[in-house]
Image (cartoon, rainbow, N blue to C red):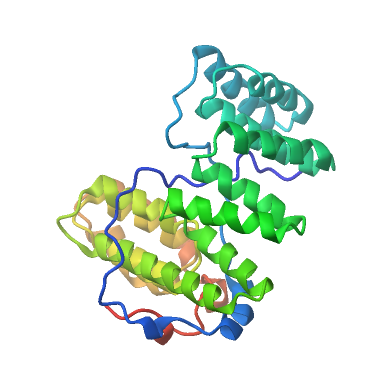
Length: 309
């Protein structure tokens, strides 16, 4: 069974700048280019707990159930985890742990071929937590996978409305627009995707920006595979805040960004912060020898297609 505890992003709460008005409209690719390149975009859906907007942290009982379920899940005790997730899904009130459990439970149902149960659970999620971007995205993806394009599109649109930094929603929505023959909408959503990456990358470049905000942005970028994301992570290796440099090192190593090797080698020797030096030294063995083919694929066909600063 696929180890996917919760297919959601840690995106909520990151208040980056709006898209720069100087970004040229000519940066948009044509719908045919979108159709040709959308398949190259790879969005990382990690096993991270839901951080849901507007939901409380849950009761002590809910938190305990979720913690026990996660342990069983990671120990490959699927049936035990399923039972705990099912109990949590019916244990009120509606909360972050409950929504997390319901998303995880739907994934288990899908893996077991219990599509009717999974579908009913997604609909229940939409009814219980309609204003949570993760819920709209996960439900939209399920509907898209099952050929319900006309229902999936509004869910993706709502996810972006709720959280403008939900980058993978832009990409998948663009693909659905192409499939539905809505070429103009596809052009617009992919341009908005490029603009959003441009905007949050500018925050990373700001030496005076809050390091906590930068860490949130790095988490956002960790879910997309795109040249501009690569460039932003590379830039963060020189950030004044050691915690930002440390996280950037981890991401550069994780995604095999070969161009970062020289910078990481320098950090391993010269960085003033011991944590950064240790992270750089630990990453070097995996970064060294990484081939260009191991680097992240691009969304646009070339860097010249990206918005210009």
